[in-house]
Length: 164
Image 1: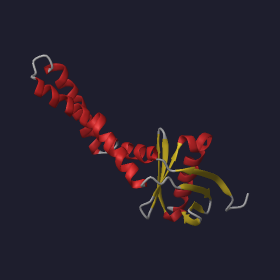
Image 2: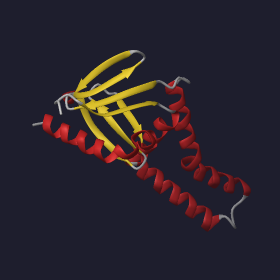
Image 3: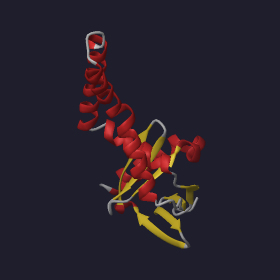
Image 4: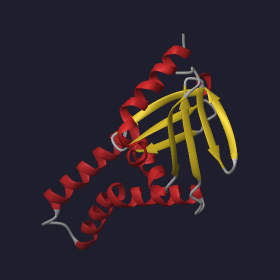
């Protein structure tokens, strides 16, 4: 095999749900996620312990507190994800080789060598490849199919080789 031979190629459209999932994973794996979980548990405990004796106004406040992080926040994150795409779902082609990652979109191609790749994060439903310029590329499981583990291992190997 040639050193620059393509090992993985993915062609897909970025969806609102991709950005939403990545944002939710980020939110719930940070300190904000800890605060959110404490707030959700506290709200549920308050509802269980005080519902019977509470006035209608206090019941409404308790429900709003519970809905804030279980429904309202995810909905706001969904709307932001949709707004960031502006209704346009670009088609991307990501090609991964020993040379780097080639991104093709809108008729343009750009090679990002491994020294420009910041890292890779694996979550249950997607993988995100972060670039040093602040961009990230989200690959959902339906795009990765059976190459998920191989891609993750290969990218980590290439990152390890280029940090030496």
